[in-house]
Amino acid sequence: MKLLSKIITTFVIAFLIIFFAFYFIFENVIIPEQLKDTKQKAKELTIIIKQLIEDTSKVDIQRLLYNINKEDSSLSYLLIVDTSGKALFHSDFSRRYMVFNDSGTILSAKYGKNIEQIYIRDKDNPESPYHGERVYDILNPIIVNGKSIGAVNIGISLKSLDDLQNRYRNILFIFILIIIFLLFFITVTLHKIILKPLKILVSAIEKLRLGNYNFVYNKNRKDEIGTIFTEFEKTSSIISNYLIDLKDSERRLKSYIDKLPNINIKLDLDGRVILANSFFLTCLNKNIDEIYGKKFWELVTDNSQLFKEKIDEAILKGKTEFDCRFIRNNCENKIFHFVISVVKNDYLDNYLVIDGSDVTEKRKIDNELKQRSSELNALLDNLPGYVFFKDISGKYIAANQKFLNSLKKSYK
Image 1 (cartoon, rainbow, N blue to C red):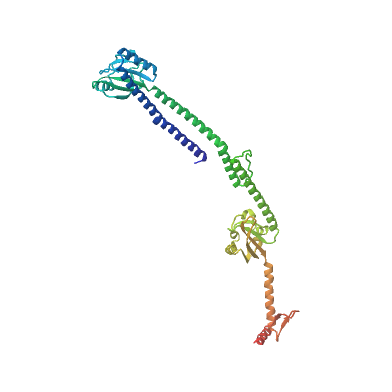
Image 2: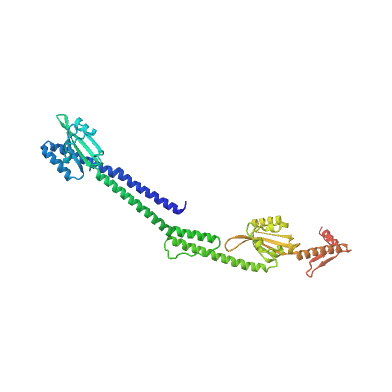
């Protein structure tokens, strides 16, 4: 998952947690508490009306119910019904003497049950101004001599709770819109100040890997992102300078070894060619691009196993020397004395240097001297008597076998 997706997911999860927390609190705390207060208010008012009935006349009861309902907008209706459900008194004069014979009213007025219920007013009468109004309906029986003679019925409108719930839902809707806007704003801002610079940095790293060290950034930033870019620019500059120095050193080294009349080759520790002088390239009749990165022993197929073993020996011991006849093109049948050494540069990188000196003539002269020496010894051995030669310091430099045998006998 990309960084932007992770950020958006985190914000969405945080928003959902906040949203459902508000919704839970409202549905399970605020609304139930409001409904609880409404129930308590209705119960207290029922008790008060029952007490007042005992001390007032019928005319006073009618006016009393009307005045109480008028003064309290939360009251939907107040009435007193007989055992048949007929409204003997009603806070709405037009509904006096109407019969309310629903099961809750009959149970309370006739059978003395305390009833609490959510009641929908005039749900079967669409023309009524009270059609569909939700009320919290309480019926409290009037008991005389142990017998129910009617009931006090109070309905408290739940419109305020419904309005509160609707307002809350509107608030939640606005809250969702604000959160969506904030989410969009934060995402755009984060993309601009963090994600986009990081993409630029990633692109710069990819270019750096391909050899492009020209890195340009906004130097006005003084925050952590600016610090990262500054440090990256310093690192890029150091690498660039290092490579410039390295290339300059290799150029000087190549110029120097090209002038040498010997084979001179630079290898990495795996035996791959890094640099080779003109003398060696002339022997192979190739250019540097053709052999760069190839294993050295693959280029000298006639002695590949010998060179591979000697390179391994040099890596193990640090240095090795040997003679080898080089049978390749312009260096055909020439004898070289090779020295393979492990070298460490200023940057603590190890590599191998192979230096091969042409010793063909030297070996030829050595062989001739050995042959002449053998012929001289044979001639001296055939001479009669004792033959020997001394230098000016008195040291023996040559003698025949007869003279040498005499020296052995004298020592015995």
